[in-house]
Image 1 (tube, rainbow, N blue to C red):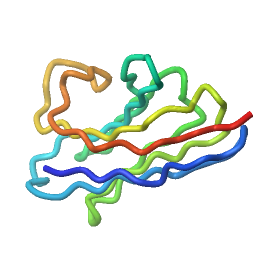
Image 2: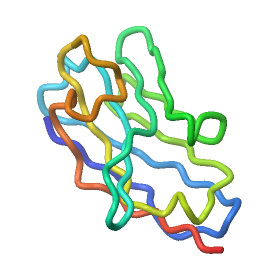
Image 3: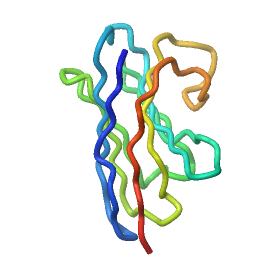
Image 4: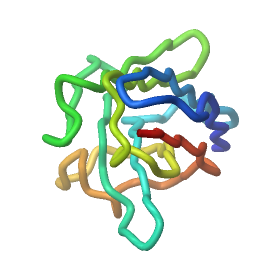
Length: 125
């Protein structure tokens, strides 16, 4: 499975961006897709996830109510709508795919099998 993330850029505080992640290759077994982010010098943190069958979603508390994850099955694409952006949202945003359902929650970074290359989001004050 290959993942291509796009949609990052530079916005002012309060701005919005819509990130996209297109999955290609053997995607028929996808269980869930997720977005994480990593700021310089910090760990890669979970943001949001969505299951491919049923569309169950999960969000980190830090972004719930501001960010929204969605999917387009026909395009094998997952989106992250980011609203009311703050300077602390500045990071490289990564998408990831989990192939199989596991006992671990959707926020568990180690449960994801494939990662995209990341797209940079910069929020200026």
